[in-house]
Length: 358
Ligand SMILES: [Ca+2]
Image (cartoon, rainbow, N blue to C red):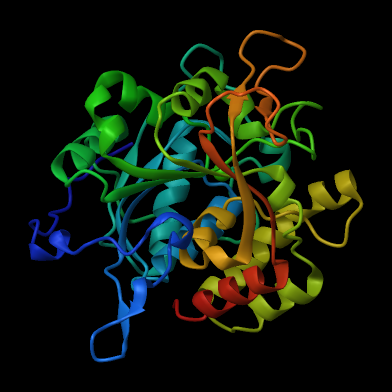
């Protein structure tokens, strides 16, 4: 794939010195810890700096659009593709298409790792279609990938920014993140937090009875990340299966009448056929946008701080997230595990934000 010179990024400015508004339970709140300034007015915090690591994927596309439609919440430093739903080159191409669809063409896109750390790549064309993004007829991208490898971009951004200021939003297998941690361990203490879609506990798995797809594709990478000590927020199947894209919800998105709304409607209408058959529910689950929605409106979600460890030895349960929900092991708590959420509020947020796009 052809590449382009890396987009110029604005130099670091004083705004990086602004104190973070996000303290413990108030992650993602648009207001500072008190929420009120000395004049009694609400204080809006600076947008959170994020890097989106992704394998788009219809649900990844919705997550990316949600982030790019929310400049008051996010300063998107870049988007990094990883092998997952389909092979890397196709995922990278899909990421470019989604960025063009959003109109935010200044956001740079990088390609990361071609394959998992130890395993052959397992893909999911049976869910997402041959392109990985079947449904809408999106034009071939005019944007080009940045020449830098996605793992190097992750390392550079984390080393360049002050510690605790960059959040990683992970929507696919964790290969790029783990590889970045292996390549430059100093990044671990600099990551503000990782918010990731993956895993499951009470819902079981979606690619095997035990494993969720993102973790199953690269369980060793997930293991590196889960043991890293970084604060992790996990959006597992237990949550995402509640976020059903019912026909009423999809119709409201189509009724926005803009290009993005129509494309999202067509994407989710395509990917639902597989899930509706599989689960027999009113609407297909919507996975990856939970990551972005959590950062915008954490009050929509409920969770518990627990230990999560991933299975990397047994072929029967490979990639299973062993979630110590009841605290029976004494293992250190490493994950804020989102077990449930407000589906109506989630779709309200997505629909409001998509309305802003072309
Ligand atoms: Ca994904």
